[in-house]
Length: 335
View (tube, rainbow, N blue to C red):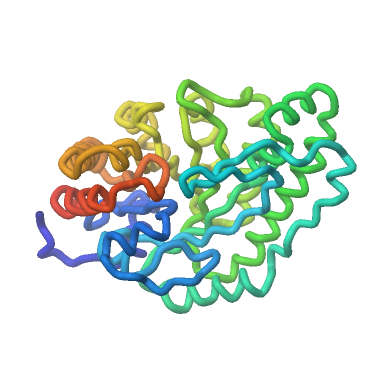
């Protein structure tokens, strides 16, 4: 491990990769860490009461994670099911045009959003990378209608979908407009569109809703664009690059071969993720260390790789396994 050379700040490090340059070491960016994990890792209770700011400087510095995430999304109108402290989406609550009239979206430029963005920018914006995280509207739409409702409406009443979708999309664009004044380094959009074997929706539907909205969010924000979806979205990779996606994130090892992905598309898009949440949850620290080491050796050369889990760091990840990622990064992440 070489740490004798000049070390970049976390902000500089991520920006070098986003600019297709080689940083001092591979950056680590994770989209979400369950709040109890930092306490378990640091073995102390962090005082942390923010609504939109994810993570805290103590845990970022301890692990070597390079970015804060500022997460604001339009609401989803569906049942929320709780299992073992994990929230999951249940059936959609928007059943008819009458239900649409009841929807009152919160103010995307509200004082609490802007105040927290200002705290983030003023306290951490010089040193850490700041990522604005949201959804472009498509996932909010299909979850609010439910898969069944969405599928029927595609045939029976596409206008019903459009009506809700444009509300959600325009809300996101307005949010981006309000947050432009702050020094975000990238925007990450997290609408899931795939499962392990392929797309959940046809390319035509994704073209109409997802890709059009993502393109607008990218243009509105003027920021490097991180695309997040679970599953295998290989079938639309060329289109994602066409609309200006800069980073494809969280590539699940169970769904896509990240080494092939880097070989085929590494000159066109940055690649992020791939440390299996399954290994982080059920493996040993040694297994996590080896998996992280292997990814760094396969993907770091020539830059363009950002270390991350294959989704996020949920409550069921073992704290000692997250620390094993840090150890592997310290040993094998330097250029």
